[in-house]
Amino acid sequence: MRLLKRLIELALVILVISLFMKNKDVELQINYFGLSAPIKVAFWELVTFCVSLGIIIAAVGDFITQFKWVRERRRMIKTDQEHQGEVTRLQGRIGELESENRRLSTELEQKSDEIESLKVQAALSERPGPEQSKIPENK
Image (cartoon, rainbow, N blue to C red; front, side, top):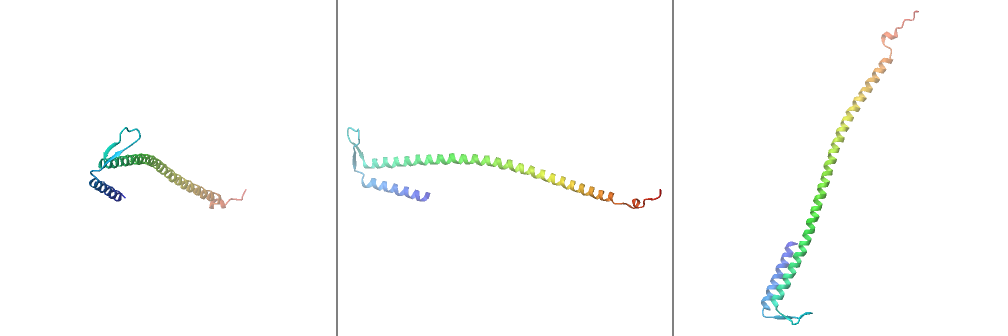
């Protein structure tokens, strides 16, 4: 796109130069409201003024567009930094929750093992052992 734009600008410059060469002796009279006498201007001066004015207007338009893009870029960078801060905070929170989850899982395993060992002990204590099976019946 830039190449096409530069080629068009080059063609315009060549056109303007050729117009100057062909019409170097032509003078124009400009009548406008409020002028007491018409202004005499050489053709090449008028063309140079108009082309320069067009270039200045285009430059101002490009500057405004560029300024808007820079402002938008700054806003996007600021938003990105805020989002990165939030992601970092959430990753830290996830790490904390994972460590808490591991601690609770370990605790759950310990409690489950403890409950199983208590069940085994209760089952063994309810069973009559070899000494308890021989109860003397004499009174």
